[in-house]
Length: 225
Image (cartoon, rainbow, N blue to C red; front, side, top):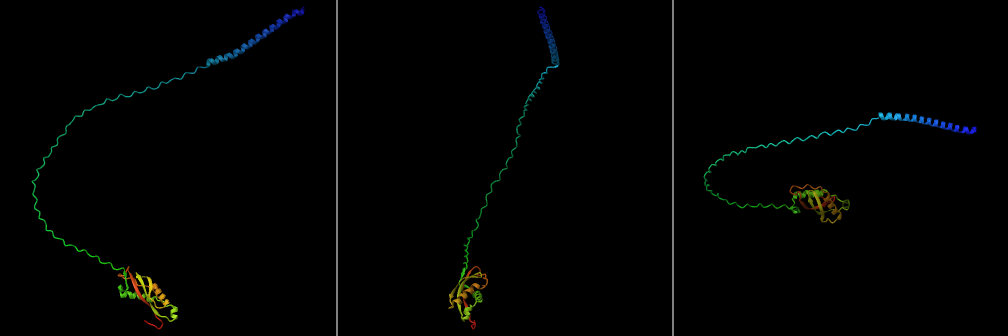
């Protein structure tokens, strides 16, 4: 019986304790909420809303100046001053020309056409060459003669007639016209023509070809000209 009576008391105490604990929990929870809410309210009060940006109106566009009125000037028309025209002087009366007497015409005698002098021949033969110049050329050839040793040893002598062309101190085209009878002497005669020192051409023979025919002599030791 005593145990049955104590059971409702214990339950009531437990319920009371639980109610007290619940109240304490709710009280502590309310305190925490107050701590949290107060700063939030303060922050909301201190924060200011941002100001809206001010719009600056654009400057007014200047009006163009009014056009200046055009001034029309009236120019007075002036007539040109007439220029006096001079009166031309009267022309003199025409003068009759004097009669002209024609001058006598003297007949011009026909002019004689001067005949051109014939050009001198460019190639002269032996008969057309002066004896003085021919002797100089002949002496030049004879002075150039070299007596062959073989002919001198054989006591040979004779003369060979040669011909050649001469122009301004130079000989060309030498050949034998008349042989001496010995080929050694004939060759020596042609060699004398090529080795000779000829005189210079005189004014009358300058630039012209002269043909010579000369005897080249080969004398023995006991022969004299």
